Image (cartoon, rainbow, N blue to C red; front, top):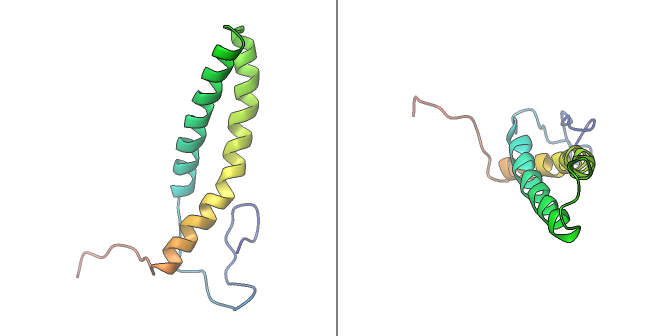
Length: 98
C-alpha cells in the first residue's frame, strides 16, 4: 500500500488495483496531532502529579521526545486507515454540477 514512509504506491502489489484516485491529503496529520496532543497533555499531568511538580526542563525533555516520536509513529496507520475508508466508500472529490 505504501511506496515509502508516507507515500502511497500507485497500485496494489497483490491485486493490481490503481490507487491513483484516492488522496487522503492532510487528514492523517490533523488526526495524529489531535490524538498525540491529547496524549501529551495526559502525560504532562501524570508527570506533574506523580513527581510532585518536577522542574520545567524535565517536562520539556519528556515532551520533546514523546510528541515527535508519537506523531511520526501514528501518521502511517492513520493515513492507511483514511485511505482504506476512502477506497471502501468510493469517496470522490466534491462536484458542484450535480
